[in-house]
Every structure is written in structure tokens, then in C-alpha cells.
Image (cartoon, rainbow, N blue to C red):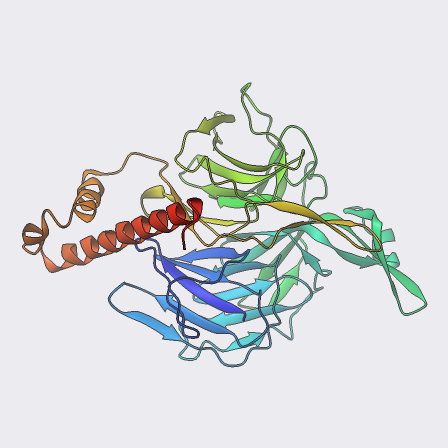
Length: 406
């Protein structure tokens, strides 16, 4: 079933309409954020689309969507613009109004301008109500390839369309912009040296700049930024001896006005990674960050900034394998997907947050005193209690699996 979920970043708990479970089925996913809600779209199973949005633990709102024109998919990009969730990957763009009563999907049609060629494993920046897409792996006709300076053909994979012409697959470094208000596609003319064509890279928006890194089979990771006002590309040279190794299928998250957080991915040697790094855009230095999830390597996961600049990681896969077909070796994550939520603390917590966490962890010792708190603060404490209970249950479940229990 292809479903849409939402996760409140204060409460690790999922609700869906059918079938009832405590968390979504394990899958590779894209995740995006609006206010305190983490919205997730998945396309792993072929039935009816369903959706849930949870604003608080006390009042979850569960909605089943109308039968959807959106076919099940993966390797797509989903992003929120206002209260509309846009999905583009493959050939078509779809949209769902998250404030609507029925969560009805619709295909975005009657667009103005040239629609980009089909692609997957691309990235997206959101800036001033515009969706700006970069790169990806997709197909073009011979004429399109001959007229393109930003497409690198994958010589191991091509297809015949009918009996008259070929369709080539490969990587691109194109920049396409979609403006939802006017339903207009444009291809901005960029300046400077663009990054090499790539896919499965990571990207994030920081101020008026869009950053990308990785996505190439290189020993050292590269990082580029595109000024979304002047449309000028800049390759950022590292200023420190310590830096992440080259990788794909990782995530990059803006956590402050000058800091990006990188996690996981697949190394050029085929290892699934669990390292976390911070990149300072002012000093241009990488710094490896110690964290509690070193034993949880992850690729093809999703990430977003949560409360107090926490980075929230969901889904993905811990393993990787090769799939053979008659034409080429296709590399793909295994079907052993993850369903846990990882939270990375990136800055010291405020005193109020520390107090909330302390009460949440030790509620049985201070339950009477907690009832004296104002109603608004009790609601916040309730969310922290739910978080720590869910976390404890996940740890217990993991221990049983590790010991061979039920």
C-alpha cells in the first residue's frame, strides 16, 4: 500500500488508518517537514493510498485518502510548499493538499514551460515558494542527448523504444525550477562551474543557497553550492585535513545558519556507513561528530531538522547488495529496511528542555508533582513521556531480537 504518514518530532509514535499498527511498514522513504510534523510518503505496496497526520499524542487525526492516481514508487522527491505536498519522480508530478478533508491527490497538469525529462534519485531545494530540482538518473532520447551538455550517458544501460530510436539512460547536472502558483517549469541559466552529473547525492537549503554533496564514485567527498538569487555555482574547497569519504545515498541537513549535518550513506568501497559530520560553511571545515548510533549504519534514509536543531533520521536500509539483470549490474538497497527513528543532538539543550526530558524519563518518581504544572506544560511533558516510553520499547524489542527472542 502506498501511504502518507506524519510524525510529530516530540513523540515517536505513528498512527495510520488501515491496517492499525504502531508504526509504518519498513521502507525506503522521503521525508519532509511542516511546523512540528514530519510528513513521509512511501510507495512500496500496491493498494490504496492512505494518510495520517498527528498534531499531538492526545488528538491524532487519521484520514484515508481517496483512490489515488499516484502509482507506487521509490527514488522520488517529495516536498512541502505551503500546505501542499508535491511529489515528482519518474515522469509526472502529483500534489495533495494537507489541509483538505479527504487528502485527495491530483496530477499536476496544464503546466507552462518545458517539463524535465524523467528521472529518479534527484534532489530538491525549496526557496521563496519555488521547488528547484537538481541532477538525477534518467532517460533521454538520442536528440535530447545530442543537444545536452549536462548529461552523461550510462553506457551499460540503454533501451529501445519501438524499432526506430534509442532511449539512453544516464546522469545529469541540470537545474529545473517549478513554481506552484503559476504551474510553470523553467530551466535557469546558471553561472560558474557546475558540479559533475550525478544522482543519489544529498542536498539541503541554507538561506539563499542550495548545497549538494556526494553522489560520485570519488574517494573524497565534494560539496557545491548554488546561489538561488544569482544562479551562480561555487565548488567549496575543504580547509581541513579531516573530511568524510566519498559516498552516495546519504543525507545532508541544515541545522543552523552556518552548519550542515551529514549522516550515513554508501562508501565507494560498498560499505554502509554510520558516521556523522558537521560542515561549517564559513570556515569550510568538516568535523566528525560523536554520536550514539554508531552501531546503526544507514543508507537511503530520510532526514530533517527537528526541535532544538535535533536531526531526525527515519527508515532506509542497513545492508546493500547487487542485482543482476540481462543488461547490467544494478546496485540496490536490500529489502531489509529499517523502521526506527534516530535522533541526533547537535547543540546543547536549553534548561527547559533538560527539565522536560528529566521529568519524562522519571515520571513515576515525580508523577504527583508533575500534576501541579500548568496545563500547557503538562501537555509538553506528556509528549516527552511518550517519547521515552516508545524509545524504551524499541530498545527492549531490539534486545529480544539480538538474543533470539520472540
